[in-house]
Amino acid sequence: MDVSTEGKNAHALTFVRYLHENAIHEDILYCLQLPEHETAQSMFAVLQKFMEERQLPWDRMVGFCTDGAPSMAGRRAGLRTLIMDVSPSAIWTHCMIHREQLAAKELSVALADVLQQVTTMVNYIKPHPLRARLFAKLCSDMGSEHDHLLFHTEARWLSRGRVLQRFFELKDELLAFFTDVKKPELVDFLCDQNKMCLLAYITDIFGKLNDLNMSMQGRNKHIMQMSDRINGFRGKLAFWRENLSKGNDAPFPQLCKFLTDNSIADQCPAQTMIDHLKCLEEHFTTYFPGLDMSKFDWVIDPFLSDAGSVDLPASAIEQLIELSCDRTLKGLHSRVSVEEFWFGARGEYPEVALCALKLMVPFASTYLCEAGFSALVCMKSKYRSRLDVTDEMRCALSTIPPDFDRLQRKHKRNHLTRHAS
Image (cartoon, rainbow, N blue to C red; front, side, top):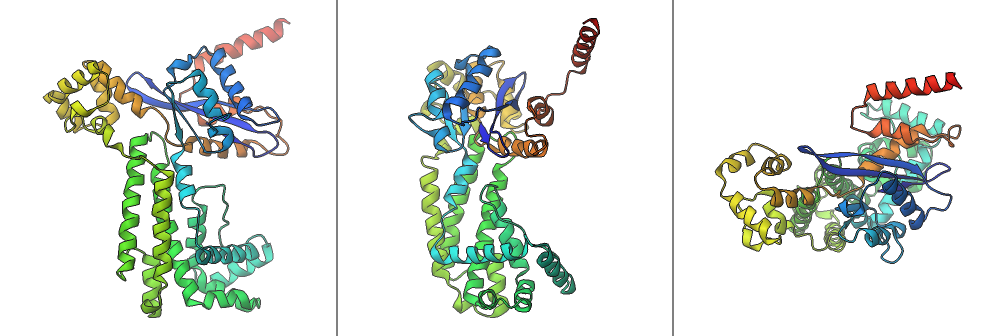
């Protein structure tokens, strides 16, 4: 669940994951305009009205996922609390992609200064058509692969890493450009090898953060998959820090190449980088506490788990023990996805299979909402700001094939009604 405030009106966008036949399905639940004052109460009122009109029982809600904004996640008056008042068994998840962004946001003074200088240069060129054309011409004359910079925005995932990557690739062209336009303070920055080392480092580390972010995006991601990604990244942070402390910069390709090309390996400000990696480790621990997924190992591989240590009802544990000895299902497990396996086991071991599937149903991120808002922005404009886009958003985002026969019958009925009147 998420809210878009782009344009004149706020819109609540909600997606749903559910079990149907032999698969877990994801689809848009609704995209509805909120009242003028966007509050937890107004968001809940929209959700409650939708649930009541469709006769959807609250006790069927397994979990829900939002970002960490106070209106969403507040313990006293947030949407989280209002939902759990009517559905106390539902489990709330703070979007793991947003948490990853928060964990990576803080920079030391030295690294923040480098990023600020990059932002200054991009803002000097990018918004001004003449400067942008001159820079593009310069890049073309120098045989560059790229001829323009990218903007950075805090509100969109991945932008910081992409901006830095493009900037670093064009640093020689930028030096020539700012020399031509007589910006000595920016030229000094681009000629400062210490600053360029830090730029190379943050280009590498934000590239790695982008890779993590991308691995958590997309459809059909459950919390166990995404937790594994986070835990893997935390392990790599320690590995990278240890390597830098030993003078090995190989895990950072841009940094390694810059140091080698300029023969300045002994001048690398490694301690600043080591401190940043240590800070990242601490922030990931803060934003992802208790991320031990070993208690759910039985879901991923019921044949290797200790059934006696699993937190399930006794009858479900008995089924898990019996299933773990089922050689036919063991053969199936190696050939299909985890989701397909548990649907296949549901006929003979219904209780434990349902327990496993319930753990895989809740969303672990608001990625689908973020992607959906892109479609909303395309539909809305200053000329169409009053448009009710509920049906259009469903057509744009739904994965369910339209029932054309039913739509045709409905259209004919409406057509006949208008003619009769």
